[in-house]
Amino acid sequence: MKPPRDKRRDRRPQKAAQARHARPEAAAPRPKPSQPEAEPQARRVLARRPGALPAERLPLILEVEPNADYALLDSGNGRKLEQYGPYRIERPEGQAIWQPALGEAEWARADAIFTGDTDEEGMGRWRFPREPLGETWPMKHDGIDYLGRFTSFRHVGVFPEQGSHWSHMEGLIRGARRPVKVLNLFGYTGVASLVAARAGAEVTHVDASRKAIGWARENQELARLQDKPIRWICEDAMKFVEREERRGNRYDIILFDPPAYGRGPKGEVWQLFDDLPAMADICRSILTPKPLAVVLTAYSIRASFFAIHALMRDTFAGMGGRVESGELIIREKSAGRALSTSLFSRWVAA
Image 1 (cartoon, rainbow, N blue to C red):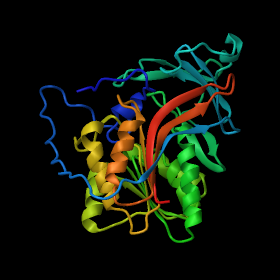
Image 2 (image 1 turned 90 degrees about the horizontal axis):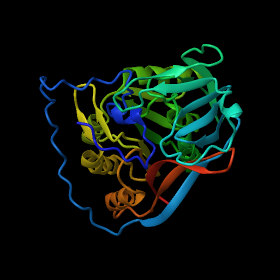
Image 3 (image 1 turned 90 degrees about the vertical axis):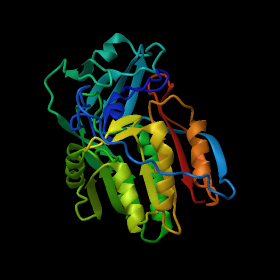
């Protein structure tokens, strides 16, 4: 049941294999052919919403530049060389079809190299050329402490390209000058939730992986933000938003970063093209009367940002505001090239 992968996009196997953002280390295994499939979930009946479409801004390219906490040092030949805090890390990068700008001597200085199987269902491994390293190491994002982590699916506990969204969200929270409620769906290890909480928001963080929730709580403690109001919810994201809609709970900002394919903790099946429209529709329904933004990010899909842009404009018809869509990129330090990591579309109230 593996969807086709678009090799033009950054293949993020951990996202593709996860259960609605449950990380592979904790994701429920796919059933063998002899096992019954989970009961299909009833689909939400959708109708096109009336009203004028929001204004639009596209293409919008949001980029992360090298800084003291993170830098894309170089890339090429299907690999990328990054600096995460004290460590230089080499990992696969399918979109880096050009040639490296730095010489072999610079690449040879890597502290950790991801090798082995990088298929969506495979388990890779880390090689440490200099000295064995522990599973975690201290990292920072804009002054917030968290743990980097070597996982068997080549990821390291944070996706730095999301920093553009986080700073935008922080500005909205601080500029609102009122209590703000943030919902972070598919929240992973929680850096976005910590940014929102530090800015003064009341945060609800949802992820289907107990292990990811544990990492996020650990990061909250490391960041010394234990006194901030964050609810940590281990649950299937779709089930959670459906229940919030029934209960009448509402949010001012919603972030959702779904995988292309996933399984929930009870066998729930997620297919992005099938389920994304319903989730976007519910996200609109659980906004407060004076919402601030809804931010969608998509990885590893056979689509351009125009597809999710059209979906978001239709979803927020009659709401006013503006839909901004484009790509998240990381600016390379060596030659200044832009590495595209994902598509995004966000509705903002003003």
